[in-house]
Image (cartoon, rainbow, N blue to C red; front, side, top):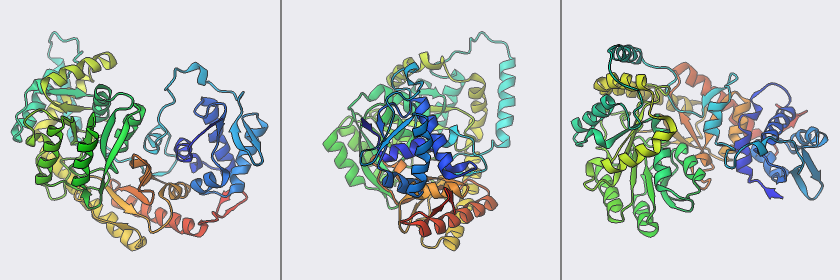
Length: 489
């Protein structure tokens, strides 16, 4: 029988307790869905009951009650002293799917996939509405399309107008860039996916920070990479540990978020940036600089991107408009040496023939005013950051955090307990949070939470109120997790 790691199962269960009804029935329904979809294949051995109950913040009796209808339906088998496993003959549609198509189990992506059901979202970090400037940009883009021209609309490397505008954007900031060095992608996530596909084979070593952006970790895990990491906590990146890892492991790829780090909000100083680029150059390590949050510093200044310190094409810059404008504007890009962009374009072409043309034309219109838009966005985020910090200090004074220098998130340490387990309790109080372990390549930072400050001030107050109520419940339930009649009380 194939065991499933308890953390993976918790991720797959997702927001199972956010609905109405007794907890054991909600849990049974979600387990049934996972079994029927083949995400829990026949023969899968479930984690020990006490361990799983603890991670789900329920009593063991709730777990046993959830298993019973599935046992009667023939989906689960249970034997005292031997555990619980998915019946070898359990109904599933897994046979109809190609291998490797189970999909993500990460809580960040599950919160995109599953309707919110009245749950306040602190698990995802992106603007919740487009700015007025975006509507005007689309209208101008439509005007461009109205002018007749011989154009099929297929531009795998990106629309020439946007590649030119992005090249000018970097050149105006002191990093000379030719349009041939730009690849337009459908968001920064596709940019990262293309880079991982090009550089990473199963077993390849890749160097990241810990914690880091979970979307990058998901891509690396999917590629079966061996993930190495250097600490990057509230005091910033441990540059000595990073450089040692480069020397010792000679990774196939390295990934950094040096400006407005996700999730800590730290900014790597210029002198350290130079050292990071030099280490990559010395050992011929392709170094990704994720600049998606780079323009959202609270003081209005930021060190130059890593490419400004690069003379050999070692740095690959990834950017996007999703955090400055809107997540629904799926325009990202890669800035790299022209030969690498050409290889990446050949990978992208069979995926989508090129990103949406109208959105690219809208991006062309946005770029000249991007600095002003970023300043407005950063100022709004700074005010909401300060509001969240004050609310946490007032309602949850034992929670420890360091104010961010920019970006969208706080990195919070709980005074005790486990972030993944607390996230289950928080969900039952109507708020979804991202536990620290989901941002660490080896499940570390288990006592941490990532808390975005994107909501309006009144919504942030409500979010902190729900977190405080969940924390009181969590403290009361530890270690027994009091549950009455299958309902959280």
